[in-house]
Image (tube, rainbow, N blue to C red):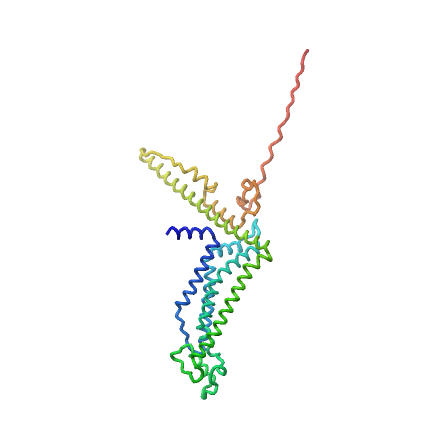
Amino acid sequence: MDKFRMIFQFLQSNQESFMNGICGIMALASAQLYSAFDFNCPCLPRYNLAYGLGVLLMPPLILFLLGFVLNNNVSMLAEEWRRPRGRRGKDGAVLRYMFCSMAQRAMIAPAVWVSVTLLDGKCITCAFCTSLPVGALGNTSHPGLSQEEMKRVLARIPCKEIYDGQELIANEVAVRYLRCISQALGWCFMLLMTTLAFLVRSLRPCFTQAAFLKSRYWSHYIDIERKLFDETCTEHARSFAKVCIQQFFQGMSTDMETAHCHLPKKKTTDDGEASEKLLGITDQGTMNTALKSWHRCKPPLHLHPDASSRGNGWAGEGQPPLQPPPEPPAPRKEMAAYYSRV
């Protein structure tokens, strides 16, 4: 149990490893889901194509969207994209890098589903059984069948128990032909996805190394800044609640002491420490203003030593900025002269 706890803590500390683990789990889940899926072709000319392509394409779309939902960076990307510019500009390259990174991870599970489905061949057999080249595989001289009747017979190829067109084309021949095409498409799809992954992961940093490093650095910065802001807000909320509860019980103690005049008054030792963690924000309105200012006017990415003395510019919105304090006057020099009567 301790080993699993250590692994989970490591994945939580490393966002990239955590998301790679989630993508791997989703890929295995998609393969297991397909193996547990009960594929039932309707064996009707008008429904085979829709059912086969739906099973082939709809689950990958759901898995792709689910990959975005499980990614914690989606809300961060949306927040960074929609926030006001304020005192900090927005870099489109960083946003594109974040979106591409999430899209690459979200495409793993859909790619596994499509690959497994094509290699199995049931979807292609169900979808395109009515488009078989009967002239090359079957008996074209079969009498008494119109075009509609031939499609109705071919549509029953996936349903071996009700297929009654052995004189037209053998069921085993048709299934083998369609499954061969499906497996060829599956291997080609896997080769295409592997090649694209290699090009994206290996060749892109080689041609745009400086831009790649810049986008990667600032995407990590946005993630770390959001985590630290959440931790600071959590610590501030804990201190705020602690001081509020302490003041409530102190007030109750004072009231009871006034009424009974025999309860001892105890002083808490953590009041000073909790008050220091509040950083001067001690009421709901000020806290709401600070949070609104963080969203509308984030501090610029320029560190200077006197940042704490200048402030963030959110206090007194709509009022002229505070003027710097005047410099103290220069000290006056006084001279004394002494005269001798000698």
